[in-house]
Image 1 (tube, rainbow, N blue to C red):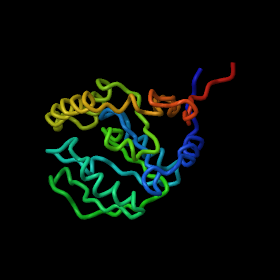
Image 2: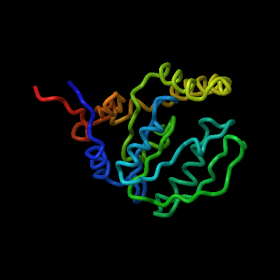
Image 3: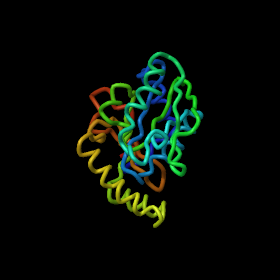
Image 4: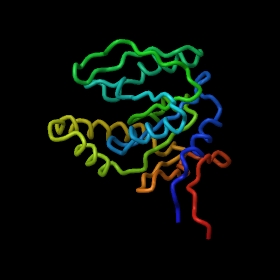
Length: 208
């Protein structure tokens, strides 16, 4: 019988990975919208001693739900690769415009959270790719319930765009770790992209 992996053990495993983007160990948290990525990233960041979390919602826009790769590479990945601080302009979803610049230092470990965080253009810069193991239909139902009927139109557009994105550029096949939420916590399972000798996390099992 499996049980959740203690987050302190998981955090130690992430810290032990080699840097992937200049001095930064960049860990992606990907999954369907509504799958619980933001909550999990917050819990994991706390277990990591307050690791920074870069939210892809800050780089996407209403008109560019998945066309944010250039901004991420130019404003974040490029500076970190040189050992510099990132400087990006977070998008305001209410005002529909980019806000004042936000600085993000090249910390030893940073989580990047959002749908598409494990896309092919970013994978060369990642030290790990975690996938929230919850199906699209269940995730979208949870997301719609969370956001309420006033955002139903947005969700209609979003689910179409997300389906198109993952059909062209899937993340799950390349994830080294699958994160499954349970009432007791989070299970860490080897993902389809894990290689022999590189499975940093295995679900704990009860003896016998």
